[in-house]
Length: 164
Image (tube, rainbow, N blue to C red; front, top):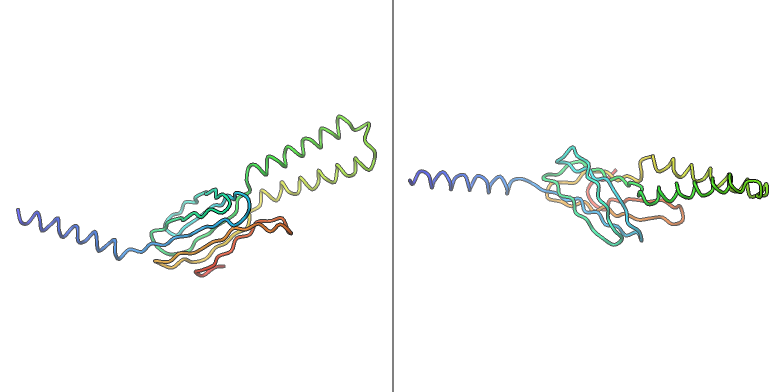
């Protein structure tokens, strides 16, 4: 009987030792933009990419069982993509249904708008802003999401760890 208790105690001690010797790290993502942001997150302990939607002012922590390389990438929201598609459809409808009543200047302006919308839609297919680096064991990397109104684009900044 004593041998069983000793084995359980040894097992318990071993598990505690493994837990204490193992490391953990966090990637903390803070959205300081005025709108909701969606990001993909790849942390060191997994080959998986997680998608997180973070509302304005919110902070999300993503756990990793050990340090290593991480990557955060912005994903354009479906709401924005759908808005662009709806706007394009509305302009196309106006061009085709009211084409005979539009002036040449209006047709040129609407055609230019279509080109800009198509360009914006094409940009949504490209990878967004990215932040990557190395998070040490027992450490936290802080990634801040912001939106640059002047340039109309998202940005990510890594404030600790070794970033690229």
